[in-house]
Image 1 (cartoon, rainbow, N blue to C red):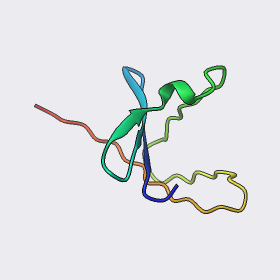
Image 2: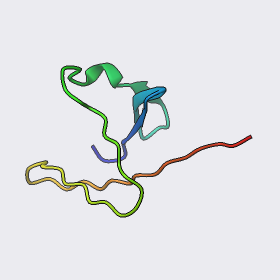
Image 3: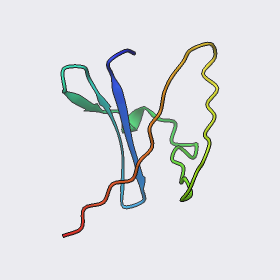
Length: 70
């Protein structure tokens, strides 16, 4: 969906999935996943390649880790 962003946190202590709408509002979509599956992945440090089978569509993904140190 153009203009929408899916934000996922797979940190074990803070797992969430939010859909950010083009107007900046967001909704919690964590409950929309199939909880009988392993839905979060851990990506190792360094270069990695993720492959998604989405049919004939095109999507782009950005993966980053953010931490705040006080």
